[in-house]
Amino acid sequence: GLRREAEARTRRLDAIGAERSNWLQRAENASTQIASLGERRAEAEAERETLADAPDEIDARRRALLSQLTEAETLRKAAADRLQEAETKQAELDKAATAAIQSLADSRETRVRAEERLTAADERRLEVEARIQETLNTPPHLVIRHTGLEADSPMPEMADIERQLDRLKVERERLGAVNLRAEEEQKELSDRLEAIVSEREDIIEAIRKLRQAIQSLNREGRERLLAAFEVVNGHFQRLFSHLFGGGTAELQLIESDDPLEAGLEILARPPGKKPQTMTLLSGGEQALTAMSLIFAVFLTNPAPICVLDEVDAPLDDHNVERFCNLMDEMAATTETRFVIITHNPITMARMNRLFGVTMAEQGVSQLVSVDLQAAEAMREAS
Image 1: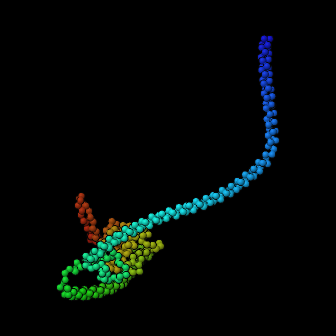
Image 2: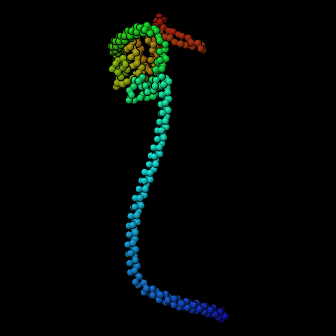
Image 3: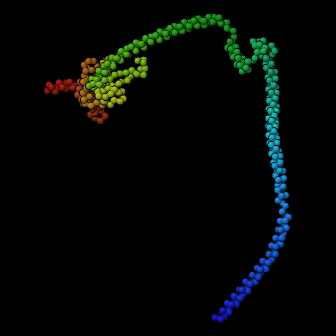
């Protein structure tokens, strides 16, 4: 234990010795630094005494420099303005010089073209003078007398002159040789012209009479059409009420005041409904309305025969009975024979004679005819 304690003390003494040496070194360094700082302090005191009067000198120099700076800035701005003005003038002068150079070039080019045109015109003039001399055998300066133009009048366009020359040449070629029968032919043509004029006047008179006749026919046609329309409209209104068991209907001319050009519209009002056009009626109502119109036309102008193709197809049994009753009345009041194509048993039962087509064999049709009145008589006799 004593040994370890002795070793510890030895180490402690060594550490203290090292620390003492360190502090001695630091004390030596501090002394050196103090001496250096003293020297610097002396130098600073000397410099402070030297610079004690420097601020006034610096301020005076600063004010002088500011004044010089202001004057220099003023001079700079003036110089900049003069430079800008000079540059602007130089740009304008450059632009004017460029324009002058371009104008000079254009003028030279224009002069060259004018000289070329003048040369071409001189050559053309010489060619024309030569052609005039060769064609007309007349000096060129005397040609104006043959043209009918004044000396100071403007010349016609060359294209017009060329066209007129070509036309005159063609007319000359057409004239050909001298025609010794010209006077005789002229008289024949005059007589022919008089005949044509007379025929024209006759045709004009015939056209006038035809127009009068057409106007008369149109007027009569309008009157007859309106009269027939009123009769058909009356029959139509009566037949419509008869087929529908009431209601009203009428025919109207539309789209034009001229009956010959007007269209026809049917305005129907079945019982219990408001007036409406054909397109708004049901299928059965349309069929009954159409039959009313057909029978109205037959009552106005009866035809020998009337063919109706399945007009009863959209009708119910009650309306089929009404349709058959109306056909019986039509057959009794007119001499029209009705041929009806139908599949309705009620309609077939009301007919006088039935015709049917059957196929007893494949591909072979056979026509069958039944006289219902004769069949009923035979049934009653039996």
